[in-house]
Amino acid sequence: MRQNPFPDRPPPHIRTATTPRTIVATGAILLILGLAACPSPTAAQTSPEEAEEIVRHVDDLLRGESSRGKVRMEVVTERWTRTMEMEMWSLGQEYSLVRVLSPSREAGTATLKVDRDIWNYLPRVDRTIKVPGSGMGGSWMGSHFTYDDLVRESSMVDDYEIEVSFEGEREGTEIWEFTLIPLPEAPVVWGRLELEVRKSDRMPLESRYFDDRGELARTMTFSNFRTMDGRLVPTELSMHPEDKPGERTTLLYEDLEFDAELQASFFSLQRLRGGP
Image (cartoon, rainbow, N blue to C red; front, side, top):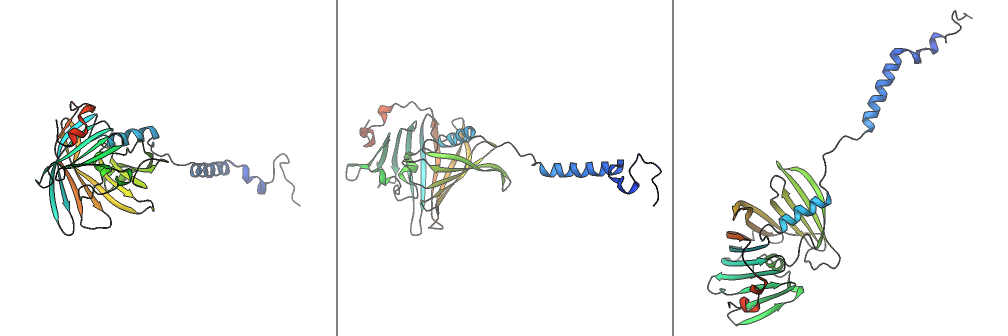
């Protein structure tokens, strides 16, 4: 057998693991493996507190602390189409009044909300009727909007748990998508809501309403964004029922005033009936 001329060194066939070239190659492999094991950085996500603040902004967008406005409602069904002119007042989340101005057949019909109580006034029979809680999901004046939509009985912030279900670009627009799940015992109509909000100006784009079985029941779109009384708002809200393709009800805001001088005493049964 050939003797190793350098007994203090390992033979060549077992010395390769410690050569500089091998060390460099091993280090490169470890570096690559290390990078692969580390997750790539992600964009900062919206916190629960920020999500709640954004949804509250949307919830209060068309009413503010107090408001007064004139709205045209267009109802399109498979069999007929009609238009109504209405005047609306609100004070916080506790008080709302909606009165029909035209057509003459419905003029004077009104709906009042005070805290959790809702009343209708029917001028043709001169009757005031209290709406039960179970009736909040019913159609208002034959439209695709409910009583809850018009007088805002429920609150997206107070009655739902809010989570960010999507954050990023969709169809060329940066958005947030929020999923809202009803809190236990909350007096709400829907099993789940999904709300899309544009990031650039926090304007709502679409709201989807799901029933207790998780099926999509209707979709509301927001459009025609304009500045009214110093505030950017969507002036066209269109509700589309899922089970009636082609039908819709659209609210068109013609005038909107914020911080109107209103007191709680304005929202009375006497005012509901058209009194001073």
